Length: 361
Image (cartoon, rainbow, N blue to C red):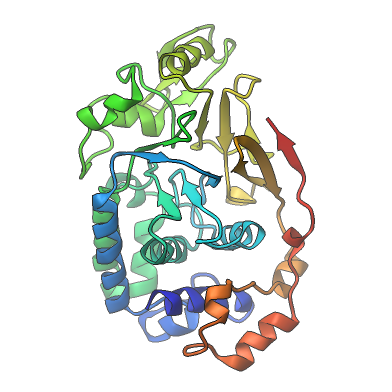
């Protein structure tokens, strides 16, 4: 089932000319690449069972591609997979905010959940502040579900937001890098205490202190908005601003080198908020809300963090582009439309197959 779902989603992105991104109803779900309502329900249930078994703090080792906010940008997500390889040949860690803002949150979640069910130990999903009922019902995901599934939209929305409670909150990568959506918390001195203080399911991301901080906090240097070294209340009303000294203390106390986080858009796709490698912000959606920004991911290989940039594709090229299918889909012909598949192969326009500018930190 999962491979067929993935094939349909990838195939649908080769035909964005023939259908607008939201021109979907229950009657033409198959043409849009979305699976049936019953298949979505089964997929979410199965993904939730897997997520339930994973700890609040993931402990991961090896080489990983770390991905920041996707925000419903299915086409950039596919470009990231095409450039670096699909699971299981490449392992991935997503830092949350997979939904909202963009037009294709459903495709993003369905693709990621399908990959999670297929390759459980090759792809990991963290929770962002948008993976909650309160935020996602106001910033696009609920509206998308209701528009695209009509009278079944609320059922689909509820299925997904219940699953969000089982997403992990943070990840320790190679015992040296702490990965989280937002930032650090003054109430979490040692990251190994996270599981003592937070248990799944996490129903609310606004209750308590630790979870809101980890999902909402942001780094700020000495000059913004006023000089400080440690922690200040955030203008968002949730989480904190944390300064360079607060981060240095946290990293030193936990014997870590780097914090990798997401949560904030960056014109270049990434940012070093304190001007050094101890804090890296990733944003992985191009042209976010029409801003024309790049996207970036971190490819961590042999302990080296390599930043890969994805630039916006011009309108003309986006209409020509065809997706590339993973090997494990090509090898299974049972559900593939051969004519459609060959059309994809013969009309590939993929700017990310060329060498991508990289920055080593």
